[in-house]
Amino acid sequence: MSKHPYHDSHVVGYTYDSDEVSEHEITCIEIVPQCQGCKKYASEIEEIQINAAYDDMEPNTWVKDQEGTYNSFNGHFLCNACYIKSGMPTNVNRKRWICP
Image 1 (cartoon, helix red, strand yellow):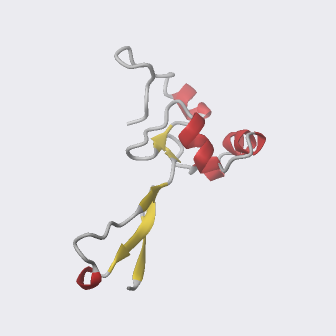
Image 2 (cartoon, rainbow, N blue to C red):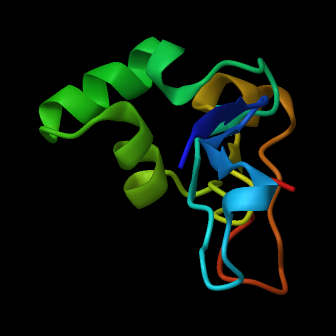
């Protein structure tokens, strides 16, 4: 089965030739965290690199596990600088604000 790499701004994964895929196969994707303020990926943000190294984690994993604004449905978050620039949004209806 041949794989075709697929990548856009925040999703990395593989799709398969449609004529070769059975109805039971699932295409797996990995959501790559991206700050929606500065548009940088987690691995490009120095503060996240430092925190991830301190916790012995990869930057993407660190954001998924530790970043309070991380949206697990689309990979969006705000780095600290962008969170502050945006006025430090809060959400009274939830325990925490997540990036749309």
